[in-house]
Length: 227
Image 1 (cartoon, rainbow, N blue to C red):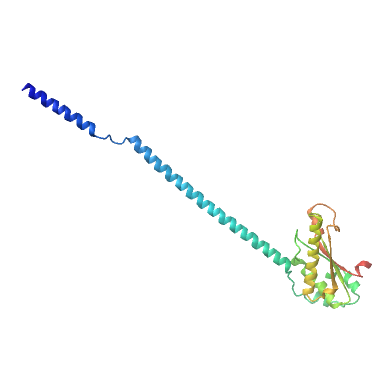
Image 2: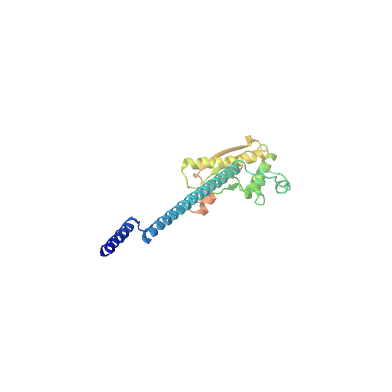
């Protein structure tokens, strides 16, 4: 009986040890937390990369739109400069007065013709709207006096190189001639010349002086030189 009990105890002990040795321990809580954290970090990184990609695309679209706007503005500025607007001149300023002696009419301070300078914005050569009536008045006067000739002198302020200012002054003088010929003045009555920054009307290195020097002067040959 004692041997039987001892054998049974040994068998149960061996069975218990064999069962424990075959089981796999469950995953620890710490391992699960590390795995979850890794997945969370990967998701955050992917979201950050996507946000950076979208921001880069938006920045590229914004730069492209800004460049397109800048090109459109530059094209419009050049088109306006190349095609100065000329409007029909009302008959009153010149036609209401007898023609008389041209020199007297040109010297009359009550006449628009006594004003001979057209002023420009910085680095521009298109005729501003406020000076179109002046150009049109001189064009009408020249049409009525085919024996008269004018010299349009283009001028600049002191900023810029000598070569650049001479070229800009020439474009300014040519813009007046182009407007007058569009208004019917024969090209033979108009000559143009550029003085660049070499013939300032005002002395000084400030905006007031520069504004006075950015101009075209309309000189009546044989009349203004006598005054």
